[in-house]
Length: 606
Image 1 (cartoon, helix red, strand yellow):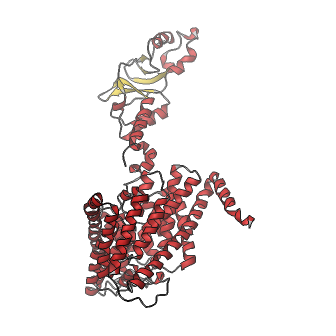
Image 2 (cartoon, helix red, strand yellow; image 1 turned 120 degrees about the vertical axis):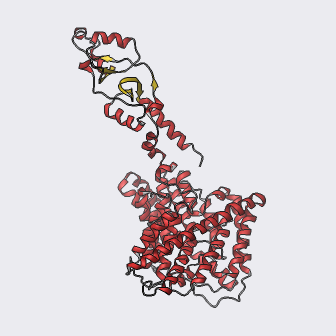
Image 3 (tube, helix red, strand yellow; image 1 turned 180 degrees about the vertical axis):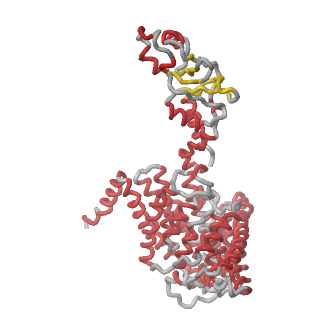
């Protein structure tokens, strides 16, 4: 027993030693974080399904469909129908959630859209730091939110829990802020890849969802290792069967791209409605209410509203993947699909918008899938010889919708390919996702996304070129009289000139007034006490090659010129007369301008 007790300490010692092995440590970190995240995802998934069976199936008597890959409990006959219990359950959960959040983690009230958005905020604004209590409380609260019927998903909370684990792990190893951010994304990728059973799609989504127009390439290695490991651990408990039990879908008729274009338009419109409805409920209804009566009453009201809607319209309860599978199989009519889109948007806005815990990822896939299903069924009804598999439109709608509103074009697309175990829908997936991103360019689900790395405080130090290109020489040099040397000036005359000026670098010109070189006082120093050379050596013999800047040159150009010439001062010439020297640009001026710009960037309020 004593030898077994020492195993964790030995493992930790190995991980610490790997800090010095750059080629191996990210693999090791990803595997360790993925293994723990996989266990966490398995426990979280089991808890959600277990309590959902108790609250919705047994107590409320709701016989909700479950997708083929999530039937982990043998369901007996549902209890007597008591749908009136659902709003009671959700209200109580909302009340308790509001109390606990306000009491222990009040900073998360304005943390963003959901757990995924909170992770994005931590990456960009908080140095990759997540207080351990935050994912614990939010994770537990989301279990009961989903299990009692609140319209929310598992993916957001498990993403935040995995990110919190990665952040904690990095802090224990005393890693840098940059490395901490990478492990935060690795944890998020592990949670997402495991809970969705899509290892590659989970990893890619985690590294691209933090930006609107970029992705964190440096995090790919630990993210992929974490996601694959977490997926393997998760499937050890629940099997590798995909979430949906669906047939193979193939795209074979190019004419069908017309309908997939219509799908993109429908998903873009549904995306606009989804995001704006959510923001209206959150910022126009629940936030003002929160200011007046407090968070716990706001979340209780959100739970009550979502519960009442779910009691009468059970298709909007919880994540809804069972209904999504029925839509893929063509067992829900188009009119009902349209009604579900509206109902799910309202229920999710009340649940998450009020401050309850849960993710927006699954509801977004749900709304996107149902929107695509409407188009698919209509196309199949009127052109059955072209749109032969309307269920494929549900899958494409899921990816295109999320790609549009979350600005994640690759991850969701790969997820759908992993769900279908093939690339039969690749062409329509790419077309619809690209069109949705263009059409939804002014719509963003996540509040803390930034456009690219140069807009992220996490990469403020990487913005050197951008910062210097926005600054000009004219803004940072002092126009002044400059001592200019003639090529024929002797060393004896030069010693007198040096003694009467503070300049360290002197422009040199020929008898026609052209700039022909730069003389550094350092190059003259070794000759100053050689009196025998005073009348033999002239400035032309000592000067280096010419260099000059103009007032409208940017500081990045100036920096490159300083590096190339190794001069400490470079003359600034009149843009209208290149022979007229109007001042000197000091190398220190460039460094000071850059340091000031970076300091201002880092001190900008979040």
